Image (cartoon, rainbow, N blue to C red):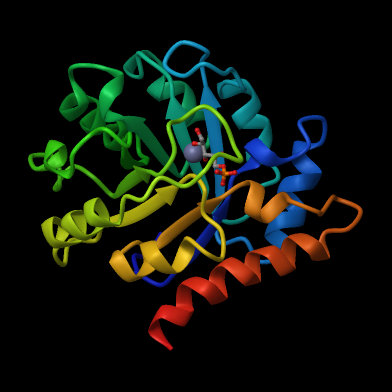
Length: 229
Ligand code: DX5
Ligand code: ZN
């Protein structure tokens, strides 16, 4: 994976048809998705349950771009090898999931994946001050994790602060939650480069009508890039 800070759209399959993930992944990639965002939830760290490493391994066969795995689980460390084996390109752990995030990020990189750290809305940017050289991606939650379709919580000040802290390190700033054509410009202007969008991409479309996915992806991308027009 080469690094650049161009805007990337990472649809979250949390909003996809849970009975048809393979076809849904192929549809969003054919319609312009840059990455595929996979929301793993354990029903403990967040009040919802999705799927685990076995399912992610099955998704891998359908992902041609980047499999961006967001772990909303605690603890994380016992499962890192399982997600490496499942084929995750990026594995993101929540800083709030346990006391040893520094070791977790070392272990993720040690298992051969890019390491991401996610910050819930209540966690300050300063929390990652000593992690910047262990991290390939900072995921700024703009909803409280657990569900798709929630209202965007404005974290643009945190994004600006992170952008300054990161400097010219090859570290992505990913925004996760409530991203749509209205909120995308706000976070792009603040310095984000990867935009997760679940409901904004999947709304109104289906595997039978994938062009709607394409329209939705283009709408978010254009809104974000419009900042630089
Ligand atoms: C929430 C997940 C997000 C969510 C985004 O816990 O981490 O990735 O699926 O969904 P939308 O874009 O609908 O807010
Ligand atoms: Zn997510």
